[in-house]
Image (cartoon, rainbow, N blue to C red; front, side):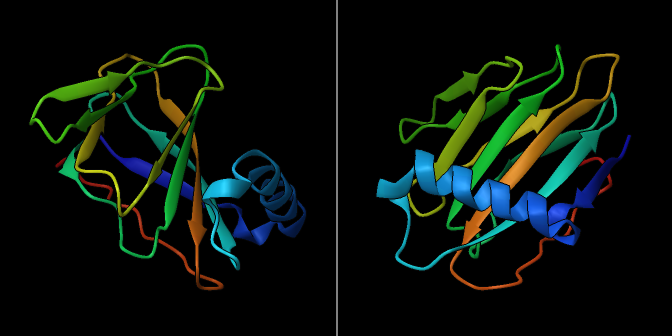
Length: 135
């Protein structure tokens, strides 16, 4: 099983629309100057990304669940208890990188798992790689 990403940075009109939407919806959480990096991600059935913390350059991560069915994201609380944010089409899961702990996700369905990943960064033109192997 693999994970594949399409960088949306190649589509400036989409990045501008995401920037406006993020500015409108979460303005109180944003740094004074920020940039948007985003991608569409497809995870094949059987793909799993074990517990991890996002890259340090991701100031805020926003994951939008696309499609009717899928598996959500599980967060590890400070109490070492796992908390799952269930899948609901168009649900956005948002977390500040400095304030969250570990999280993980997997695709245990028979369909591909699609998400729109939006990262708020403090640096311009930041891109993030995608791990394709099963963890």
